[in-house]
Length: 110
Image 1 (cartoon, rainbow, N blue to C red):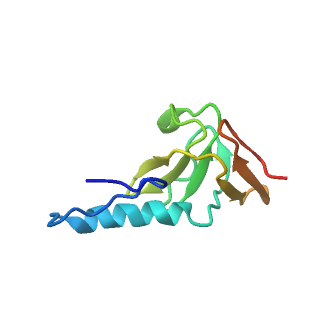
Image 2 (tube, helix red, strand yellow):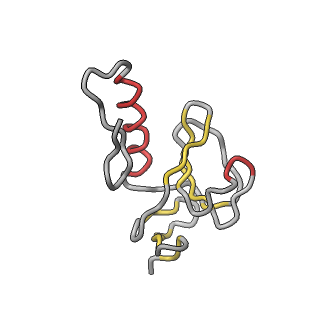
Image 3 (cartoon, rainbow, N blue to C red):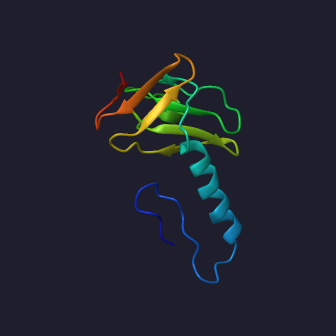
């Protein structure tokens, strides 16, 4: 099964069994990325509520260890992670500010 080049969304294969699982996983990932608006940026997992999105800070711990600067979203009782790409922007709900990924860290846009 392939993935898209930019966002890593799963592609359906011809005659794929259980295609809805692949499709739904891509939709959840896309839902987390479109108009990226994380609740906060922090080192440890936040509120474990379906659909919650956070930015992992530079020293992830617990379930987030090894995912520094990733986008973390909670889906079906587990954390999923999306690696950031240069230039990605996000509106931070907790600080009412915009940030962008400069290739190394998330930093203030303005």
